Image 1 (cartoon, one colour):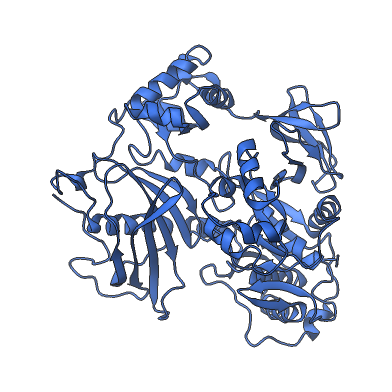
Image 2: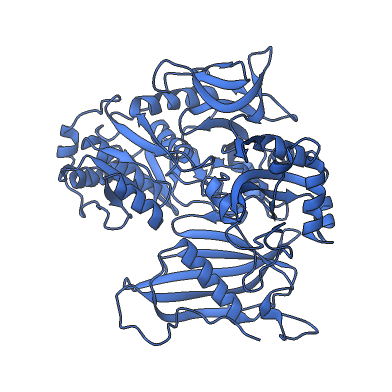
Length: 606
């Protein structure tokens, strides 16, 4: 293990592997040259606070170390969406990396002399701000020092790495712009001499094809990604090469853990943590309801309300930190999680436990998962629920989702105040997650922005359906990629008169919806140029859950053009059917406005 404090100012080594870009190995010597370039860029700037975003974890790591050696404080946004950039600018920091007008490293790189002259980093002075995921509301900035991060790397290495080979490639489905990915994909591999794979694995197919392609491997992932793994894929390569699988972002259901073990050859190691605390505890669920074991440097206790409180050198101050998780203390020194204890809503002056609603709902045979939250309605704030039905639940929903919602309300009626009974329902194939595989408040609320988005509105929209746009459930919304599920129900207006005996979804509607969804996620220019390689492979019929895979940028060779690549497909029993794909290009440069904008694909009218 090399200290992070002098990793960039040590004599460059060509034998030490730092990263794997495609099939190309990046050495410590090459990485040091990249750090020197970023150091020179930051050293030439007077500002001290810099927001850093870059998709490539190798470039990101060099920029991070370069900024620290230049005496800068780095803010780590979770994405580069316009709203995030606006908030960063409100904080008064400068932009670096691929953020708009961001500072970039010089090319070619300068000599290492100026970087080496800075000497080793002061672990207490090198500072970073990470942001909470927003699971309970708006993201909050959390201050970290390099000393706190280094202490966490010490405990991770001592807890998990005793039997590992040093040269294992680290693959990840998560972004390094959040604390979990930062530690497990970037800082820990850098310090331990394990090369980080710069290709992020978004889909099960990516994991099956890439993990193990370069020998012994680790996989850093989340419950959301593990839930989507299919037994129809060939996992032999990954299973033969993996030495460990890590999962964080929420407790992993035991059945998912068992399936992952069967496919990947390793029961995932679950790490319980947060942006504020870092890692707190871990488990490897070889049996259901296995308790959590605290990490070696964490003291913990349950307070009078059963809330988990911790104390650690990695958390600022000597006071106990209340996590908001409710726990049951066990005689062996571990604990069981009992859910969040800080999720109390006030509706018409009545205190309503959102956790109690969720626990009651998943105790029924109809729901596998449920998240309760407060949503605005015409009569004031009320409780809404995003629910994932079981097969039995979907069977009930076939007779009408409103009927299923009413049955669930009846279950709650004996234990929840009437004013606290849910008034809004969204039924989905899976809970929406962000790039880290976390279910955030913002993503849940987004499901209630469109009438009928995945379920019934018990008061406002009794039919539970929107005629012009299908219900949307977001699985991923990141800076340059998004994945959404569209419920193609028979009540959509585009089916009116379109082959009544065998209705199919018009291609123009598919294109229009792909562009509309892209405009929600990306900074799409207004001036349309052309469409390329547009294909419609299979018809889409009512009852289909249509997946929209959207990728933004990096496709067109012409830098003046912005490009959207989209694929529309469906899944049935883990078999994939491709329906449509194409590229849409816009001009980045302002142009005279025309009477009609070709980039705004027309809605279909019967």
